[in-house]
Length: 557
Image 1 (cartoon, one colour):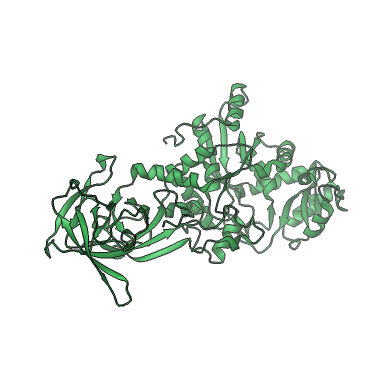
Image 2: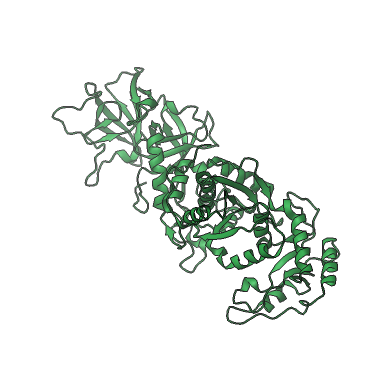
């Protein structure tokens, strides 16, 4: 596979890896991307994917895809499939290294028995609420469970009976025996196993009623896979002592090193899976792949490219410091990519008919137009030009504001790739709404500017007879403020209710007939669009990916 990280930036993780390799601690690095299959991946996960797979490509080494599937109540095979599709779409491949933490359930159970045998784990009868109460606070030490000093034999017996399904949910748990006075609360005898009856695991079915916790499973899964550098986000820094305790106290083949980096915080969105799940479940968006969502599936449907997302992840870098990344950085990455690759087309979002009176009815001229102004290799197409065309309503004004350089009564504009026209007459309906313009074309101006005449500007157009009626979905940022919920109210109060405008009567040029879902175009003077999966030959649908420039908050759309 071609390395998608063309010129990786230096960062502290790369320095650690280079030092480890130079010191001979490892001959070959091994990383992993370990999502929980309880939702779709988002742009924050993309940063981790690019980092982990990119490191394995650059040094070189291996990167596993492993699902940390320890909570069957929230996990689903839909998420497993979607995550694999997203990682592949981003341009990465795990070869034959697809794993599930549930693959190791029997080994993890054996490690728990080993801990019990060493006096490092015990069966506790406290309820979940009592465990929390005994744990203490940041300023007060915890209290030891009254069951902490059970004998090894009793613990082994009880633990085996827990697995056999003898006890109900919440009746007992297995806890590590570490230090209830530790200043790190994560070391105050954390829970290793919980009883869960009546759930069906997407991999193991009903084989287990005893499930390991994430914090216990994750380090041991890393160790079983001989991961050298376990890279995770900064919120796991306080969990690292327990990570190290797990791999130090059971018979695993290697001892990975956990390294933390700052997670991606992106303006005008939320990154919590819990909040994203709420948006989907409550119908604030149409699903996980809604183009307003920060999910990889949503960005793909929005028209983002893998190259743009990888470039964005490289630009923001890898640090230990939490910071908020401007949405404009992500939008700039997709603009740069599509500016170089997207064929140009014309689309009239809000049509206004123009009758060019000096063009005979039935006469059609095929005008040549390049598909890209900077790349002749993308070829040309023809534009049918005839008596009746559509222009955008925003390109005409009877009482124009200062600096208006489009069509006005008695003035001239150039039609893109066609002629200069003059507006001669404005036709209105009974309510005074402009419904049609009458114009004259200067037929000597094809491919050249008229001499000695002032032309207002250049506007786009589509033939009324040959254009295709299309639905255009104009997507914008899902939230009105950079940090949703920061003002004290719930994050839902900050939803931008104008984040989707659907235009059902737009007209696009005939070259867009048959555009396949996922094809991307620049609609000249409007923005970059992608064909939506809902599109049909009879009713094409295009989603706005991003405008030609940042117009957020300027009222220009």
